[in-house]
Image 1 (cartoon, helix red, strand yellow):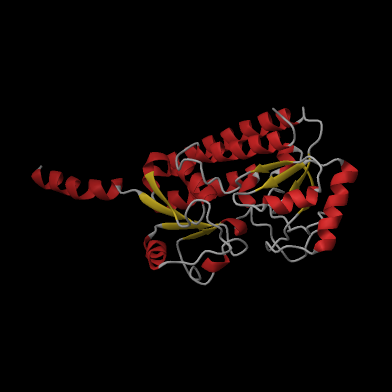
Image 2 (image 1 turned 135 degrees about the vertical axis):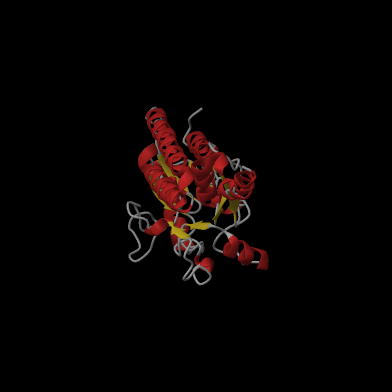
Length: 289
């Protein structure tokens, strides 16, 4: 009897140990939090709001990557700085390569054509993609932690149901708007466009975050005047003076949105909160109340 009790004392802490998921960016960390619930531990590699285009790994980041039970990242289309570090990593889930993920090409700043051979990396803004990631993560966690497999799958299904409700509600709400045409400071929202019925009319920056030339800005100004465009989606720290210059004295709604969900709490329901905040900002930009 004492031997059995001693064995239980040894085994119970092992079975109760939380699986640690290290997610590269906030949206993926929020999906992981929804799937793990209270049964897992979720950490985020990049600080909230940090750009994956300019981030440099610290020694502490490399240690965290080596220690994590599972690493979740978008893939080389988004976190190129991780590609070499994660090469050969056995505990890896790459969102852009998951079966069922829908990928879109980056678009030219004028919005009239796509850029062959590219990938728009903002895959989480497609609710179907978010569900694919959640379910793939649930299966990966179930393989590492079979005792909680049913819980992970149940959490992923609940997440999918909540996103389905969000999609239905927002599609109906946006139908009331007079116009759903918009400009973007940085083209980051095309995965969200089908859900909200948005019509992209161009961006001020190119896909690699460079400024196009004066001819492009003139084209955007002419398009604003001709089509009566007034909504421009910016991002934290965007150049408002440049945006105002393109509007050339015409009224415009310059609304800051956050496709990285930096302010969303890292907990179950955080992803929907971040997505809902983004959707509400787009709605205001387009003239909704």
